[in-house]
Every structure is written in C-alpha cells, then in structure tokens.
Image 1 (cartoon, rainbow, N blue to C red):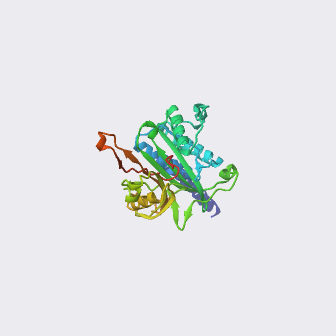
Image 2 (tube, rainbow, N blue to C red):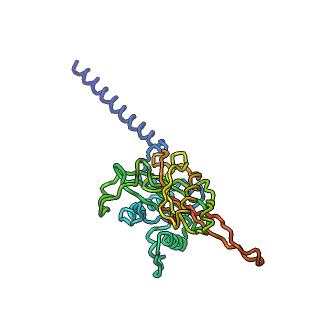
Image 3 (tube, helix red, strand yellow):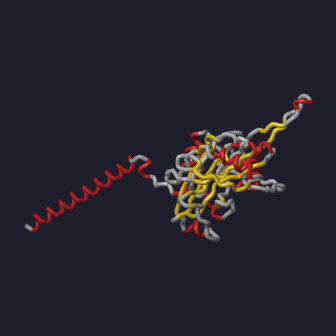
Length: 323
C-alpha cells in the first residue's frame, strides 16, 4: 500500500512539474506575441504634454521646434521653467526623432553680445531671430503657475519666425515631484483667478483668440477733437466667446474710451478651455488703436483731414504680442 501511494505521489509530482513547465512556456509565448502598446509604460505628465504638442507639429509638417525656458505667468524667469523646458525637449527628441528638435544647449551659442530688449515684444523678436539662426521652424514658449496639487502649464508655439501663420497650444496640470521641488528656490505664485474667471493663455488655461474684431468707429466727439492714441482694455470673455465685461486699463482720452467700449462689446472670441478640456471664462487684454490719416492735398479747396479707424488686438499673455 505504501509502495503504491509512493508511486502515485511520484506520478502526481511529475504531472505538476509538467504542468508548470507548460504554463511557463505558454506565458512566454503570450508575452512574445503581445502588441508593443500593451507592454509600454504610460507616459509621464511632462512627456504626455510633449506628446500633445508633437501631434500638432507633425500634423502641420513642422519638424524643427525650439523650446524656450518656461516663465512664470508674470513673465518672470524661474529655475523650474528651464528644468521643465529641458524635459519637454528631451521627450520630444526621444519619442519623435523625426521632429529634429533643436538642442537647448545650442541657445547661448547663438546669442548676440549687443542684444538688449527694452520690452517683452522686443525680447520675443530677438528670440525668434536667434531660434531662426539655429535652424528652428517653430518657437515654443510657455508659462506656469501653482494650481491645487501641482502646476498648470500652457505651451504656445508659433511658426512666425519661418514666415508661417500657424499657432499651436498644449495644456497640462501636473503634480510637483521631489525632483521638481529640489529645483525651486521659492514658492510659486498661484494661477490668476478672479471670481471664477481665469487669465487667458496662462497656467494651464487655453487662449481666447478674437475671431470677429471689427475696427472701432470714431465717436463724434473724438473725431471733432481729432483725438488719436491706443486704448488698453481688459475684457471678460464668457464660455460662449462673447464679451461680458469691459474695463479700461489705460486711455489717452475718455472720449476714445467710449468709442473703444462700444466696439469691443460686439467682438467674438474662441472659447478658452482648461487642461481637462472644459470651457472656462477668461479675461483678455486688448489694445484698440485710433489714428487720424491726413489726406494729401489735391488743390487748395481739397485740403482737410478725415478720420480713419484701425484696431490692434493684444492676444493672451505669453504669446509675445503684449501691449
């Protein structure tokens, strides 16, 4: 009896061993035939942001981007902005070698000793020239701010330096890691928000761009006084793209303020969205320019002046077109 039990146990162990071997072979075979996507690790937050930008660049056949240091939403530099730009550039180059990403360490090589920007617009123009000298087709800039649990990032890219008119935007809200924390030298400012309204194009909020912006008409008083100048206004844009509130920030004359308000109330904007794709209300800074054009003299009786209208719209902060 004991001999038979021993034999049965031996047979059982043999069956178990064979089953284990067969199972291991089967698992190995399954692993070898799994599609690559099933075995890949999900992208990290910064790599995912880089991927959102890459998809747009590739769709537009733009293959040579350069990424500037990201700044805070008030345009101030921050060590974390350079760190994030490095990671974004590395991710684009690694995941999409077809993009021919311009290495960030080449930036200082193209610096001109005489460069001195007097304002943000001039600085951006100089950055475009330097990126162009490095062979870039697209210049990527961005900004970030503190949001609950991390930072909100807005990337805005343009191919204007290559004579194009394309604009690309990518948004993200990512947690702050210990590595990022080690880079920070001070606390980050919070993302701008006033009673649920965000600043367009900053800190993980998308841009509201003017889609219908008719030039302003001179009022009778402004025309009679031959007033000229630029009115700076801040608009609150709703989730449907309509202008809901207008606040005059700076004006050369109250009469021009009235004309500007009448005009911009009828403007229409694209809908701004957050990093989750939800429509959000935003405020946007715009500049409305009034110019008087002098009519050339044809004869003594034809001398005079006529009022003309013009408009200049400042897009959301971080695009290089601020006023």
